[in-house]
Length: 356
Ligand SMILES: [Fe+2]
Image 1 (tube, rainbow, N blue to C red):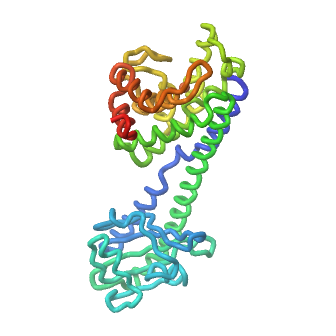
Image 2 (cartoon, rainbow, N blue to C red; image 1 turned 90 degrees about the vertical axis):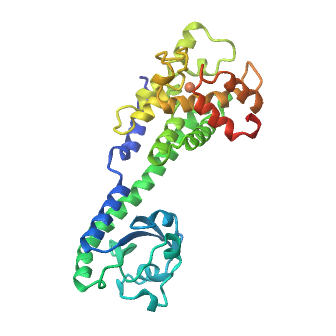
Image 3 (cartoon, rainbow, N blue to C red; image 1 turned 180 degrees about the vertical axis):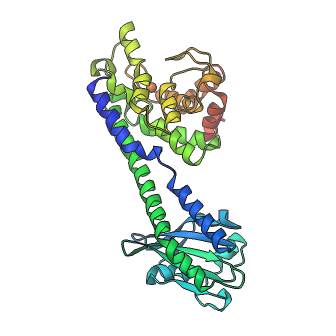
């Protein structure tokens, strides 16, 4: 590995330590689940306060209809959770129907019937960062429940803070990886914007193939970093306009392995590394570096290969004009199953009305 590749490896490793840690959002959810069962109530939620937006967002929900509430928000001061976030003072309400602040919209959305509740502020360094709300305890919430929550609010607030930091770091890693990959892209004047487009197509194909959540994020990172190994290829070869010698071609074909070497070793990133290493493999075994066949090629690599080839074909090169989207889709369709994974080609076709 040359110096720039080694530097890049250090930067990527530093930024991606996040992938080796436990998912803090899962920790938050498990804590809430534990509290709901400990208190013996029916449901609970943890809200995060976004100071910039002046809004509260659900971060964890336990109980019936929880799925329908994801993504919903409250203004600071609105409803009971909003007023607890604004005042920083806990509230116990024995009968929500008698409270003028109670907002029944969330019950309607989740087909839940709230009777009583306990809402407690979550603070970090004296500042409200969110609230925890517990719903429906038979006979109502008592002073010992408040005492218990008082003791648990500190660790829950810490878990919320961690989840917040985790999401921030994940975004930071993705954006930095994209900036690095784009910088590498720019060394080759003919591939401008390639990384962003491969990221976009790969993400969309992944979604169509039901890849979601953390896996989708990993697919996107793999797509961002797929050509990162080009940092190890000298400019005069990367930018060469004429045809390549056998030796130069062999060197260029090393980029998936160089890229994999840069990223590998970070726990939890195995699928990202596979996507990078095998994105030039082809279903019939004619690809490189290992000549794998379709079933042997990891899924991320099969998806990135289709996105990569589609973008390469529709972009102008020194030795040929760009194909139209229809011509590129026809090219892939003719080779599906033989060179490219059928399901990824079909998913790409469904994205473009012309290809159907
Ligand atoms: Fe590549």
